[in-house]
Amino acid sequence: MTAHEHQPPSPDELREAASKIRALAGQLTRRLREASEGADVTMSQAAVLSRLDRRGPATTVELARAERVRPQSMGATLAALEDAGLVERSPHPTDRRQALISLTAEGRRQVEEVRRTREGWIAKALREELDDRERAVVVEAVGLLARLVEEE
Image 1 (tube, rainbow, N blue to C red):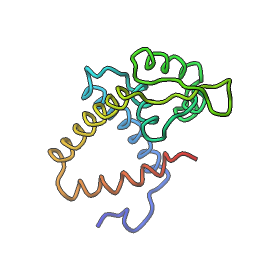
Image 2: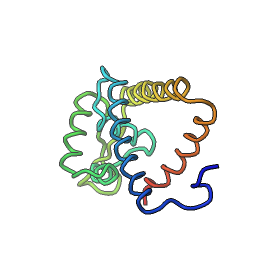
Image 3: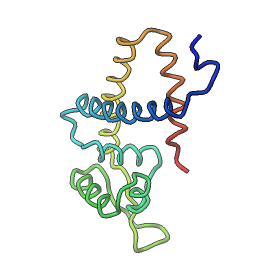
Image 4: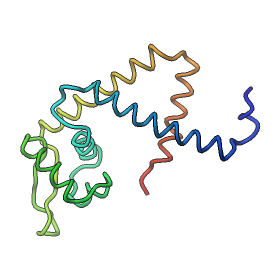
């Protein structure tokens, strides 16, 4: 048993953990980017495609808010995705000033390909680099980390 099983971590230990999580998130992002080199979309474009796949059609403003970027930045991302034939615009059913963005069939295929590649890399790393107990810890930690980033 470790000391942490009996007493909560100190403020210094929490700060150190926060620092390590931040650094590891950056490293993981770089590794996932490397794993999907040659993919036809950037990480930010893949995030938008994935969100549209999970949540369905959305406006530019809704996507910008969800991805925590300015609407102008999201507009540029969507323009590139539209030019590539991965998303399409349709009239908003209740607000004529807005358009709904949705995936095309090709966009859905791209989401599945990127997801398969990145998840495949992670699964392979988990299988090859960790033992059974460590994999169980990672599975539990994923749920805890998800709670930290859940949308309000």
